[in-house]
Amino acid sequence: MLNTFKRFLKEEDGLGTVEIVIIIAVLVGIALIFRNAIFSFAKNLISKMFPKASPDDNSAWTPTT
Image (cartoon, rainbow, N blue to C red; front, side, top):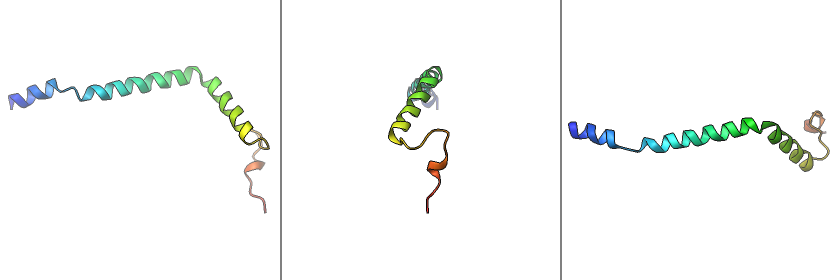
């Protein structure tokens, strides 16, 4: 029982989880800092892909008969 507890304390499997959480937190922080640039890039990209649809016009999404 004591050996099992010692092995549990020495185990480093959880370290990978902590690293992933830190990386995600950094990415979220960067996304929050540059959110205006990200949104303007996305709007520009979408307007180039779908030139007939404007961001404020929902008529492009209505089905035509």
